[in-house]
Amino acid sequence: MIPRVLSIAGTDPTGGAGLHADLKAIAAAGGYGMGVITSLVVQNTQGVQQVHTPEPEFLRAQLKAVSDDVVIDAVKIGMLADETSTQMVVEWLDEVFFSTQKPEVPIIVDPVMVASSGDALADSVSHELLHRASIITPNLDELAFLLHQPPAKNPDDMVKQAQELAQSTGSLVLAKGGHLPGKDKGNFLVGTSSVIAHAKSPQITTTASHGTGCSLSSSLACRIANGDSLPDAVQWSTAWVREALEFGENLQVGHGNGPLDHFHRLRRQAQFSLQVPHSTISSPSRRQAVVPAAGPFTQQLWELAGDALDRFSQESIVPALMQGTLNAEQFHFYVEQDDYYLQVYSSVLSRLSSLAPHEEERKMWAKAVTQTITVEQEMHRKFPLPNIVEPSPLTLAYTDFLRAEVASDYVVGVAAILPCFWLYAQLSEYLPEEIADDHPYKLWIGTYRDEEFLRATAQTLEVMEHQLTHASNAQREQARNAFVRACSLEADFFTQALLIDPR
Image 1 (cartoon, rainbow, N blue to C red):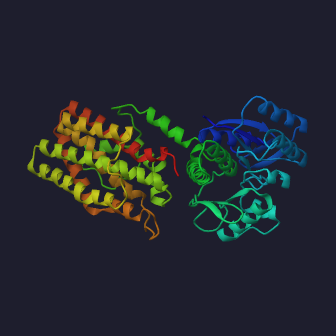
Image 2 (cartoon, rainbow, N blue to C red; image 1 turned 180 degrees about the horizontal axis):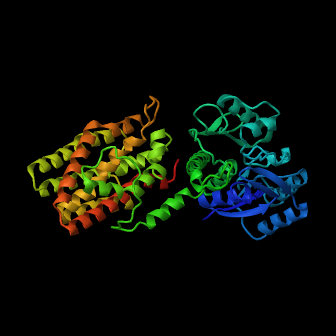
Image 3 (cartoon, rainbow, N blue to C red; image 1 turned 120 degrees about the horizontal axis):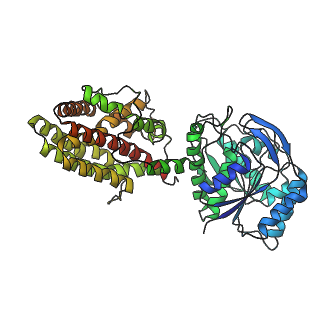
């Protein structure tokens, strides 16, 4: 069943926060969103200008229209501009959900008091409303305000304050750590005496965080209604919001604190579906190659790699992998798919060795096979992998493409395998100057600076340049098509992990 989730909140005409963000977050979390407007807020990414609150009876009429007709599987309550509106919502909750006993339907109260721009929105969250919440989701300042205390300065103090609020209301509290000092900006789900879940989330430096709190609470309500356990729901929502923050600046909305990107995954999936096989359409590369081209023909190929290189730097797992912020489940998915890829990659290299016209080239490909088996797969043995890795459709598309291209023509086969050398070598461009000892993927990303692999890439480029120099015009065209398609598939391969649900 698709969860039917009702958001009761104010508006944002720029679409980044409030009811607009709630509906996007509910959709991204797999639910059907419904909205009851509490206030019409004149705001944008630079701040709040006006708030107009309709008559209370209009609020009640909206609530009744929904509950009279639709089964509600979860409720998220955001901005309430005055005490009358709050009391109206409390009375409606009592009539619909509390007529007999405390409901199983999750009721998430996000005590919105200040917009992310710093502007005050409301100060009307009543004790009666908090008592009816399944989970209250305050940030650091809202938690302190509700308890009439100074804001916590560390995670331990924040958890203590959350326990106090849980004890006084009988509700669980999701204390949001986005404003805490330190590297972990994660969230703590707290009961009266213990921490139920802690979802870690590293700091994201961004100018697009408008609507973060609204989006987190709405997605949490939807995931609980969808049947997730409380820890799983907290982990999912925290990881999803972190991803949405990472991609928010790409939207380029407004001149102030822009919105996060609720549909970053959907956008990437759409891009996959738009890939055209064997297309030579590509934006020119503006990057200096870590391993330079071996001549004019390979330089032309480099100029065709622009789109793929842009996707590496903007849409793939590479930025998060380098920063150490990539979700562990997504990283392990990537490692599993890479393990399957390497098995096919070895057989493709063996095929090239058998086709090579010169002894030196045959030795080069044979050595690459040995390196793949003895060195690269040793890295995989240091990470937990299932006995049998199930390749994703995209991984299969890439490996099937390589098998087909190397079987058709040696020159075309070399062009198809070249991005796996050249683009992979380019990953060292994104490496930090120093990899911290506590970096979760230090062991993995350190291999991107492997000098022997860079030398092998240079040798492959020399072979490609030599083969293209003596190839026919038809072979060169086929080789260019194969190279561009392989670049696209290589970028897809490094992006697909972001499409799985993070936990």
